Length: 108
Image (tube, rainbow, N blue to C red):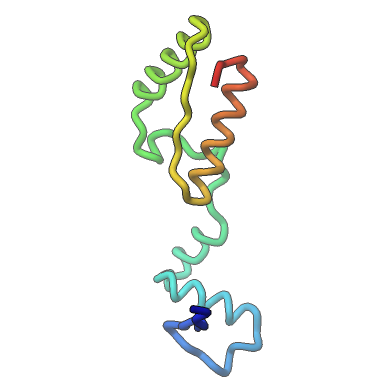
């Protein structure tokens, strides 16, 4: 059951494989990023501190509602259960959230 896996490069450019920038261009093209603007946005994303809730299409009222509920749970010494998904960013986000609750003396 030890199957060998092979990488499949969608847009192959054999002559360019030795140059690192060409490899980056191939990877960007494989992601569908072909315009200069799309490549720049991917390679130099907005700093997280500069992203607004509106940019993420998150309603600030819902964030405030969640904050009030978390504060109430902490002040009432309620137990808080943290759930997250199992991909890399989900596990990290869940860990960061749990750490924040722990720092706030929540029973999480």
